[in-house]
Length: 429
Image 1 (cartoon, rainbow, N blue to C red):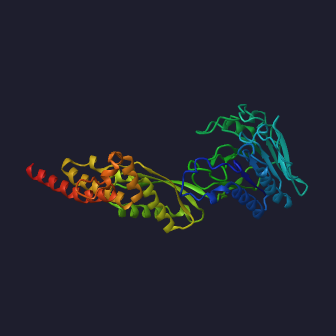
Image 2: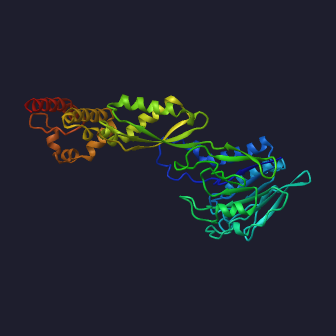
Image 3: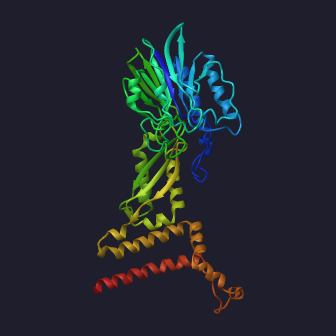
């Protein structure tokens, strides 16, 4: 029996691109996520006492700002070296030989396959060759050659494994590096292909096994769901058991919240709670950043559009109440439509009034947004146009600047007036 771990696309110390303006995300939990996922990988290899580990490229995210990133990887590989667990790896497009300017000396258990031509490496256990790994690293980032076509023929009677960083037949969102085809890999005669480059987990084929494990830690909202590696057990050279093992310490998910018929803030809160409870499994073990898209036809549409920061705070407060340290709002997207425009004409008047009332109430309840709205409106320019001396007068000839208190009073009076006019018009018709 042979057991090994197949992982790829660690992207160690990958920067948190686009997350700086996401105020509800826990930067402290995300900053070291790739390092912690790598530690989890090594812990898994030690606890399962595997025969070897395969790393199929993009271990690094690019050249290092300093050598700390390299030392972190060497330190983790050293933990495996202490237990005599070999690691065989290749470089991919992000960490091609030409991109890493300050390579460090690897520990004795780490075998990096060369980049000038394919190389075969024997895994020996108790004096016996239990597997032969065939592979080739990228010398340059833009590797457009079909590397697999020059991989050697399998060694008869042995477990032959190919390790390759490739887009295979082409995958959406991934550059077409080291292109090859599923048929070519099948015909090579190996028992297992340990692939890297594609960040979405995929079992492309069985017998022979052609596997993308995906990356070990999702780095942003486009890399959703559990991320990890495969624990592979071969009982002979052909039959294998594949077990996916999550390694990530922070996840990403995208949810849609239908607000059709929601008419007030309480409805928004209730529907949000129901949605999260429906998907409770996603945060039971691992912290998760959730992007919520609000959809549906609702009288809250205008309020939602004009008060997105406030609504985001409402949703994050719900998240915190449900799970203090595991639920975080990555981003709120408002894609609702105006309920009034979808209704028969006789319903328009009442729905529009309700919409106005709810929108104004939302602004009044959120003084900062209210003040910001006034500053961006023509009211502010009118205020500036009032001569200073006129503002100071305390008699009937003075001009009172327009401010929140004045508008709140106006709003409370104008809605009933509009409602009365609308009802009178309805009686005439």
